[in-house]
Image (cartoon, helix red, strand yellow):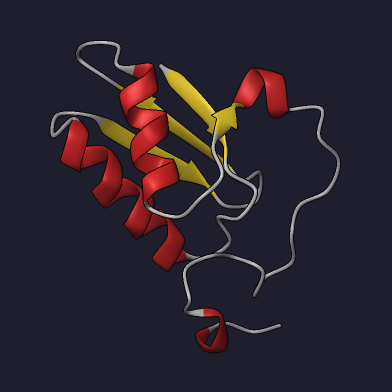
Amino acid sequence: MLAYQVPDMTCSHCVNAITRAVHAVQPDAVVEADLARHVVQVDLPEAQADAVRQAIVAAGYEAEPAVAAAAAPGAPACGGCGCSGASRHPA
């Protein structure tokens, strides 16, 4: 299982965009997102870590391996995401 720290994932729209991006490069992947921790986990039938990370980045989100990024303090408040739907969720 791959895990990525995605600090700018703050709403369900973000989760859907990231899930679509991962499925575009690996249709059989199982994607789980934890909004509170800003972590995306991807279970792949074949490990394609770089392709998955690039898909998340291409969708407009930062994506670093969760192990390396776990020590990063803080996370952006709602409305700081890159989904351009910020006006639809509370501040």
